[in-house]
View 1 (tube, rainbow, N blue to C red):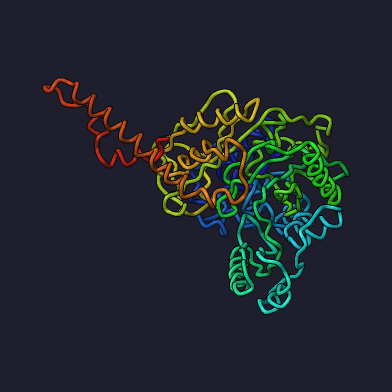
View 2 (view 1 turned 90 degrees about the horizontal axis):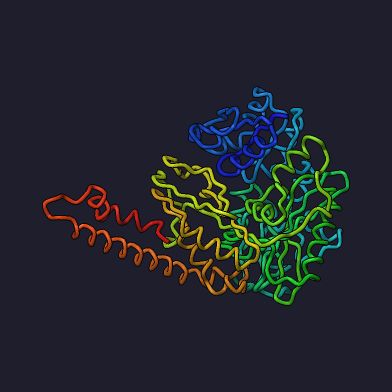
Length: 499
């Protein structure tokens, strides 16, 4: 079976490596901007599908289907993002006589519409927040039906995900503006302006459960992940298992995810997401019908290669595991390495990677597509890669990721590495005492601490270099490396990624 990987970046690299380990030939697609990208060089074959603009390349369904046909591919793996949750793409793949490595198209459709997904979950017996299950296309209608609801409320896009098209309303007076803003964003991002309203759960944790189904009546639960550390509702730090859950609560959340998987006769990987309130009540949010960015933490604690499981399922139609084979061992933590500037409102950064040192060692894993000379552009998502660690205990995993973050070096483009280091060493993270509002409250202090760490380290480095220069005999010029190092522009670059 030959696999076409309909994606780019670290997830394309991840899938191509899994193909190689299983002895399956792989085909990479790339845009003109990604001609020299890492995934194109790792694959057995590569095909250009269009110009840099994603809508003309990585989201160009006819071009991708043509690439699959001309390359002789038998199956398509969409990764995450781009077309991974696009029902039309899944149907086009199957109509071309190819296997779609993911859920069935009808499952993607049902889970892609949050109102349908909520109804399916409720019918399956899952706890669902009481809300207005209406496609509210007019603010006036919403104002009329929300008048009796208790604020704060959450206005959410019916389609899409990733934290887009979501707004909070704290009073009836601001509800109309919030609905309009959420609706406009939803239309621009997802092509569907419909939104709905549900209660806002304060101080909630975000817990998600990994499921794997064969589409023939078997659904496995592969544990849960803690994803509460978020910025603008985008996950930044994830871990498995979720800390502090009682055995009873963990079992109940797992069973709820299994119930939904069975109701959907789920095929391939999926993630069932929940909110957990301070009283221990949990509520269904949505299903992500694809592989998740944070899948490595589940792999680290279960020992199950999730991408390989998808590929084997596409080959044989059966799973290589039973529920009795799933055991959670130790603790794993993942942080997302993003090209952005935290102190400037986390705006994406661009540039050329001039230095790269990825941490190594026992229990340390880096999933990335980075290389020295790589151009980081504004054409695509700013996620560069992921740092994942494993430890026998959560405390051991925390120590390991602290050390790994100190080793991680990227120059030429700014990243969130210093900010991540501050999160990991914060008291709230160490004590596992956080919820989805943690970064909203702690972000300014964490950014300032990261900036202070830069300045202290850079000052020490400069003092050491000056001292070394002073110890060199005056008759000899300072070595070029010292001359370069004390250059103020060089010091600015040095500060970027020193933790």
